[in-house]
Length: 536
Image (cartoon, rainbow, N blue to C red; front, side):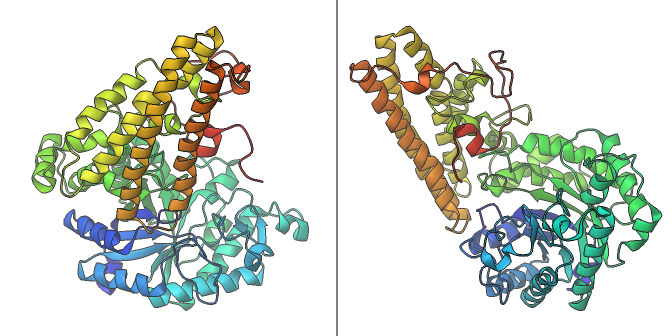
């Protein structure tokens, strides 16, 4: 493993913390796939989804990897020339553990551990000890990102106001000392240095961080510049230069978009990565990996991003010809590059996700109704037809089955709420009868989508975590049945009105009765489904 730990990292990072924990057979399949495309590293992003000794509530009920499972994966990957690197959290992003009594008393606020408290460092020590036993690598990502409220909760109550940058660095030093005890070289997300110095902004290449702070960053801690939002080459170049002023040898964490719903965004991933690689080349950045986050419950298959990962791999090896890349892709996977890209459900790389918010948009409350474009339904009908041609593929047909089923739902549901409200306002009974019929069809289509998505999830992930999908998709199916029943009662004169449809609809983005029909990005089930409180 020593040779692996001295070579530059070219890897992918799988999010195993947003309910979707990739199962062992699929993880081995992923390792094979990455090795075949000349990646040499697979990182596992595990907030609490790995076993920590003497901490039975860490990862409890979350499908966490056991030490033996990690050993199995590590051994398998090593034989394929792949290094498994854990990406953990040692400060924030620990929202799944903070409500357990075992940890509640040493939480600063939100999902942030209480820095300076010895119980925090006892937990961190156990994290390192467990991972040192489970994995042969001695490289580890310790997180530290997005701790926006550090020192603003219990820490403030105990100690009052403070120099937050100094407290952050003190914490990093303590964690680095523990890591050194187990032989680890550490890397951490860099954003908190920038945010504290620039009023919460990360992507500000003009900030100045004092030499005193720079000098305090431990030798065994490297920084990771993460960015996947821009297509501007100069932006990445400037940010990388700013990072190297803070500490030389910064890693780069790009992104292959799997975090805005059920559909990936291969096209934007490719364009953003090409710009980022320019910045990496200009600044001699050698450690590069691509994050695959699973925000809001890990809905998207990681395998849906094979086109962008293949393209990026070829591009990094010097093949800049899109024509050549597509030809090699077809030879390798048996599906044309452009056809595989249909999984994006858009052909222009916009960072929007109508397929998600239409699925969860309520037929009566219709929080997203005012955004629905006139062509959304027809576009998804056409996509469904194209996707249907790929559902029989031996290796990836199940992905196309899922997305075809989703397109069928979106094609019918996109403007159904709008039609319901229009017919209700006009008291057009004939039209209401038509939408009642479509509601019944929609329920069947949603049941088909549920079945296809369940198959996809169980193929790729541990079963733990699908309970959330049961509640969401199953709840939407029940809600469609409920709305249908209410519409029938209204049409039959059994009820005088439908309360939800009596309200004046307002724009989701706060513009009152002024709105614009356009595809948008809203990546939150709870915010799309209802304005009501879903949980205390």
